[in-house]
Image (cartoon, rainbow, N blue to C red; front, side, top):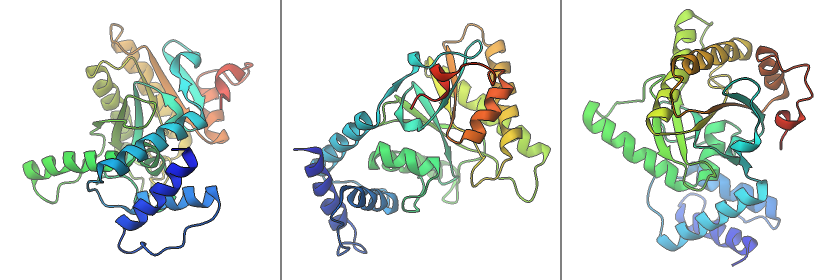
Length: 278
């Protein structure tokens, strides 16, 4: 089956799986079909898929990852001891762990085609990720009650399924409203510390952090980066014998790249080797 055939098959399968959108018109172009498939995946509640559909979804998403280009962690040079910067789509990284800025339900983003990292990671990972996280949250609800939501700065580990990474670490960052407080700052620092602890306890040699809380959670990017860099440096200094060999700050926006370059003293270098590998 070709990639185009897989796409056609999956669009029809996910349409059939959806009561509300089973009759939606399928676009004629490839990009339109991809958007429709991702949207149907985004809105789908956690539940099982027929094994054949799941297998074809996995083949399709793994080929999409290869088409986008998989980035090996060894190809991202350090900018200082144990720390690297990489600008691009975090779902391309063949990291031991990538960090997802999750919400307290831990089931991913249900808004079709939303650009948040939670949506991007779940879309490329596949529907297995939402089902897995649902199962984990059900266990927590059985223990703590049906109203349980994941607390801020308490990470949860999952397989990465169809991503090049091995694991995804999901963490709920602080929501800054109406203004930034010391509590928000402390919670963000704890997000980085707890993710590093969890990754190290699962023998991860490397981890890629997104810019936690700087999107819809409204944490000021400059202050968030200052906290991220200081916290990671402190953790590395305090764990010299850890299996953690490289921490990558993954950014997407040019403005965030500039912030991290300045904080890590790389702004004036010829940084093409790590700055814009896309």
